Amino acid sequence: MNELHTLWDHDLPSTSVDGGGLVEFEDFDAWYTRARPEMVSAMCALGTPIDVAVDAVDEAFTRATEQWVQVQEMPNRDGWTYVVARNFARDTMRTETNRRRILRTHLSEPPVHEDPPPEVHELRRLLEPLNDKQREVVVLRNYFGMSEVEIADAIGSSRGTVSSRLRGAYKILRRSTLLMASLIVWGVFT
Image (cartoon, rainbow, N blue to C red; front, side, top):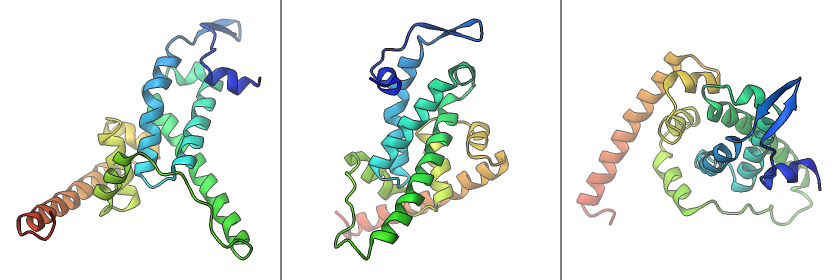
């Protein structure tokens, strides 16, 4: 059994010696159990295929266990883990795109990704009018409850940029919601 398998089977020790001191692992399981499904859903809502999202989030949590002494002290470990997962997913999708480009001439059908949960499709539909950067800050703000400062730290932007993206996104979402409500009232959509 490899070390990764042991960690994900919740066989974490309650303490571990690290550099002469004891490191507590007792709250990792609770954090992992709460945050993992939220991160996978958020990444899917942002357009990441579910299999890539699951791999990316699992990789991010693996890295969190490797650096647990620092991660557990972070004011927003969800933000740090999200950034690690996002970067891993981007790298994976770039590699997959390049692989598909090479194999396209040899395959009759492209590989099929597993479908995300149904609520993710609805969230994607609602966020469709936004660009990728707006979509990301809206999900981090509303799905993870991160502050503008935390979002700025997580995505490597200034607080002002995050604030501007949120304002623009909310304005677009209000307009699209009003348009949809008008279309329903006029019987275009039921």
